[in-house]
Image (cartoon, rainbow, N blue to C red):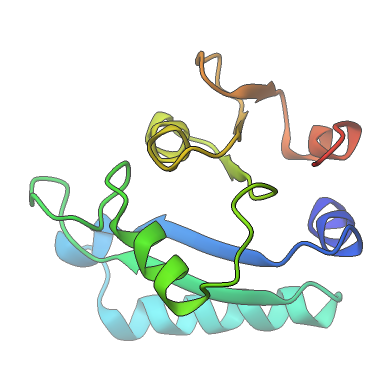
Amino acid sequence: MEVLKHVIELKYEIIIVTNQYLLGEGTINQAQYDKYTRRLVRLLASVGVEIRDIFYCPHARWVDCRCRKPSTGLFDQAIDKYPLIDLSTAFLVGDSICDVELAKAVGIPSFGVGLGYSGSIHLPSISDLCDHQLW
């Protein structure tokens, strides 16, 4: 959580874009997802980390949709809702190849946590983000 506080101190806002295929595949239901998400947002807020918004893809992994990362649909939704986002200073932090590929598709830098994947700045752990100069 210290990393998220650090990002906020640098005047960034946090928007989460996430694939939630467990919904589409029936592993969890919408009420369970909503309850977990509310709990996460409250927990983060209690330590001073405000999440600006969350955009999620509820579709199963085998569904061809525009919102499932690495497709840009979730990112497009965020930009439509928040048109003043300055993409020249935006960045994405993720733990999967699809996160890195999304960042590449929209033209922003990415930090790959635990990924040895080219195209992103490798972070052994999320706490290492504090060691990087963020635009």
